[in-house]
Amino acid sequence: QLLLEESGGGSVQTGGSLRLACTASGSIYRRFCMGWFRQTPNNGREGVATIYTAGGTTNYPDSLKGRFTIFRDNAKNTLYLQMDRLEPEDTATYYCAAFFSVRGSETPCPRTPNKYTDWGQGTQVTVSS
Image (cartoon, rainbow, N blue to C red; front, side):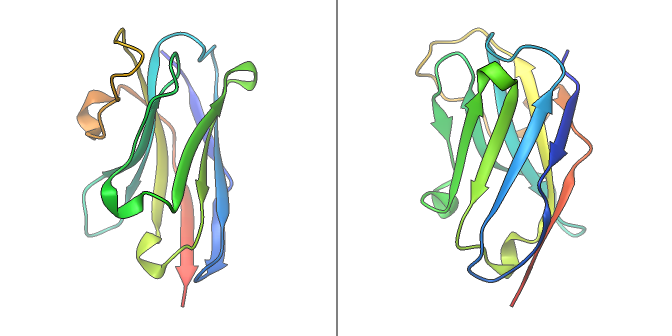
């Protein structure tokens, strides 16, 4: 089990950028699916990006490809989400999550939140127009 802590949230204007970080309590160089999810008060939790820490395979919804980038630094046990060209619709609480997974290095990790067992507390991102 990993203890996860997010940081980097804040308020930006439309078109701005933010980089979120998620620091894990344990080593993530092992085989973890890790991901970023977001949630608003009126919507369920949505997967925005996932990565397999052993192979680096990423998974994004088509609507966010090119604007959001997930990457990790295994040496620092940290997961990142680079968010560019932010829009008001990106306003949400962003969560980092993980679960241990043995899979082919090129098999993408799921974006469905119910697969993930370890969660951070979330960090707020607010984009104003």
